Length: 373
Ligand code: MG
Image 1: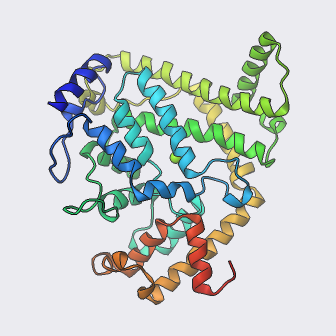
Image 2: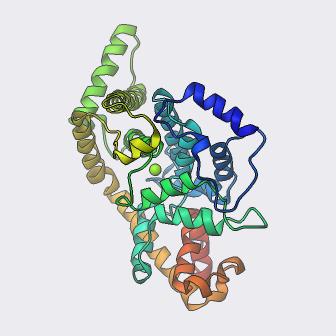
Image 3: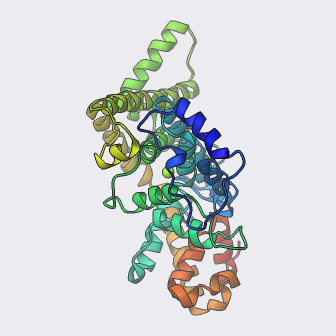
């Protein structure tokens, strides 16, 4: 009953190459369909209601909470990705429910302290096969989250799990178009908001940025618009307007290029698009400009001395905490200790740490080392 209503809606709105809910391979543990929510709507809701999703609020994106409260957290980054991905998906007439689920899931496996945390866990768990936030997202939603009494995990659809698995292992297979949109939206989002946050935090200036072709192009557009409106732009509004343009230019470019890709030759359905290895991309000119911006952000922002200091501190805290749990497994909570027999002590300690927020990680590290908070 419900699936036919969803199908009616999707048949009216989606392009032939979109992934239709009726084609879902279902869930690992069979469940009856919901009366009025489609399978990907249910996935989205399960992700939003998970503890791991709430913890994104306490996980840093690039800048820590100690650096102010303007910049993005891992949660607000995720919400921006979902919003931008939905816009692109709606324009391309793809399955927005699937896109939203994938976007909300995409960073759920990030450990505390961003990439510093990820690199440290990868090093600590080297003998266990390393650590990847993309893979840990699957561990969280398939094993660690436990909202239902009859099975472990969130029991997400095969398509959502498979898409996340493809993120974790790029060679694995060709991703669904909906998953590609989320990947592209992730990159569009962080390129735009890292510029905003880094300028606001005075790590870089608009003048330095204006040497980059993508920024110059966007600043030009800002100037044209504001000349036309006659409004006087303060430095603050110039930064904000630049960020709007950065999103607009990238999204428009991706949509235009993707429309060309999807028309020639015409994709008949999602399976064909997947088998043909269709890749939604930016125009090569914009891709080159994006790479230059990303190289600049890497050098001037992600490797800025203030960020490197945070990185070193986080690495030390994570190493100490990991060692403490390995030396005394009784310090681990009971629902993690039961995993030791199955996956080993080191992996269990790593998984427990990976799920922590930045604040909780610091608090535990202070408590176990007897350091003052
Ligand atoms: Mg992301």
